[in-house]
Length: 272
Image 1 (cartoon, rainbow, N blue to C red):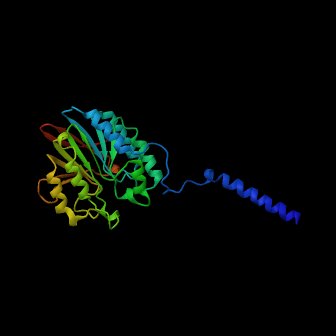
Image 2 (tube, rainbow, N blue to C red):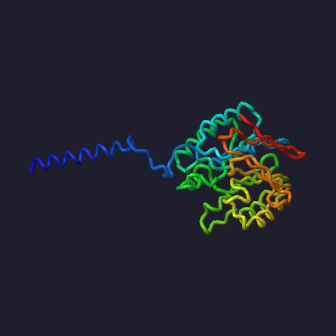
Image 3 (spheres, rainbow, N blue to C red):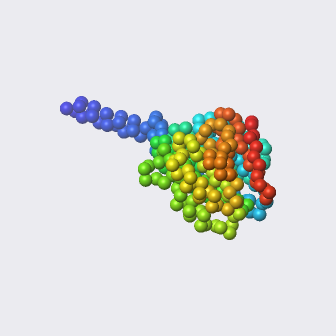
């Protein structure tokens, strides 16, 4: 009886030791929305962008997209952007991650934090996998947002309709209506940014006509940006004067650089 009691106590002590060392043996669940470091990044960086660009007559904006899993290429891209020293800020067009895991988000945030200029990140369809959208909201903020830089309004949208619930409005026309009513005296021109462009499988193409009706109402609409297709492209889905510039994936080692002046805009495909 005494021997059994000692054996039981021994097993209990062994279980306690093993459990106390679990954190050293097992990783946190990949889809646990639990991480250290900066949160609400888009709002913080957007405020910095607006402040830094106040009064500028020229904007230089880098647009990258689909860095999912290509960490070496992304690090090289950040180094190249910094070395060029041309950009006022960077817009990441989504698919920051491949599987929406928290570890991916943290690793990619660490690479973006090496940029010498502020950045914002748009939600991509891969970023929605698992609990990825929850992690995105905690790390970056709302999936639809906007900011103003040098009297240009950048409207950034979630267009990943296949990843949404049936009750989700994607793209969110109510959000666009609200943006049309906000800050009218603070901007003269508009750029609309998203991950999935019209005509692809992710976009809710049944709402494309309505979507473009809203876009045409924004003051001085210049162009739209997108990613998702993993290739560079320029197209106008409705031939109505609205052009979409698509940036290719990081493994193809390029990004887009837009220069916006009082006279208009130009864009370059930058290879590194």
